[in-house]
Image 1 (cartoon, rainbow, N blue to C red):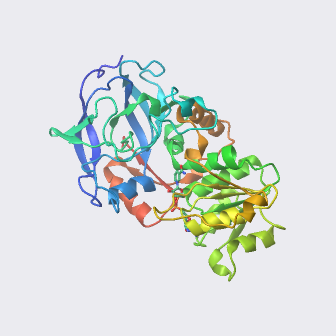
Image 2 (cartoon, helix red, strand yellow):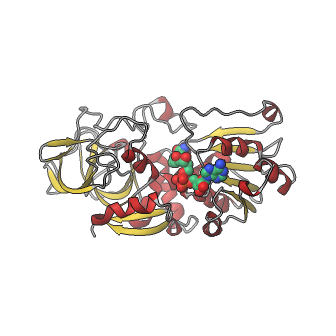
Length: 380
Ligand code: NAD
């Protein structure tokens, strides 16, 4: 048992006091974990669009003060009552969505959408008692998606913690907590391209590039990257993308361009943009008879998907996925092993690095569209 178990820990955390304002490094008090909770020492974290979106609080009910952060790697400091499969010292990835292992979803081989621990961006408190484990000078601070990793210590539900190989470098595999696993799983678990097949990837951000990495691992022979920003193409080559299409360069729909390039359509497509037009194109560009399109991007609230039903009759399949269909606790350890056995390359996703004291720089990089992932080192 660690010497801090059962005690309140004082440590540094980056607190968002107001929407869109720089985070402030504060001394926070982190309460011990309650039943089915674990307290983690975070060693590395990174910033993702979801943090920025809720920090900007455009179009949502603001919830401040709050500690953001959900992609991270750390070590278990102590565990609460009832936690049997984690112990102090375990190396873990906290995940924004969970796996209780008890509900119908967790018991189904087809679903990763746990009833109890599915992503909840509005909760801001722990499930056990409806309260926060963080406070600054006595004021409670809201949690974010159950992870709040922009803190040296955080408390997480045990069902949102994946225990991984302790030999895995946490400063690299921490990026598997969210977007990279999503793109990778969208291809490997849902699109499932066969060796030698053709795959179109719509959107070459981190999620799309991870989907391309999945296509490379699956042995696809043609990986066609589609993006409105031609600057993405150079970087995408590192991820196995073999051809590029910018829809803006053509005066016909991009699905027709892709059909001409591929003798009728690609075998698989993965949409990672959030644009409804790209979603429709991604579906319509797959080959009839066997083509499968997978939607990953999060659309706008009022979007609706329109396509002619004949596309379905012509045996094109449309699917969608949440977190690449990975169950966090059961499946993430094996994704880490893919990295350990050199099947999966992760270093190329980490394009920037800052010490925790300069976390606001990570926001600047993301807002300016620079790079893919900015690693934040908690010990620096
Ligand atoms: P990103 O913004 O970094 O990249 C998106 C890319 O798509 C950009 O390069 C942009 O130029 C391109 N794009 C936009 N509209 C396009 C269009 N019409 N045609 C072609 N390209 C277009 O985003 P990201 O971090 O890579 O995430 C991609 C999407 O995945 C987002 O919508 C995100 O919310 C979603 N997401 C979903 C899940 C899930 O579980 N389903 C998880 C994480 C992220």
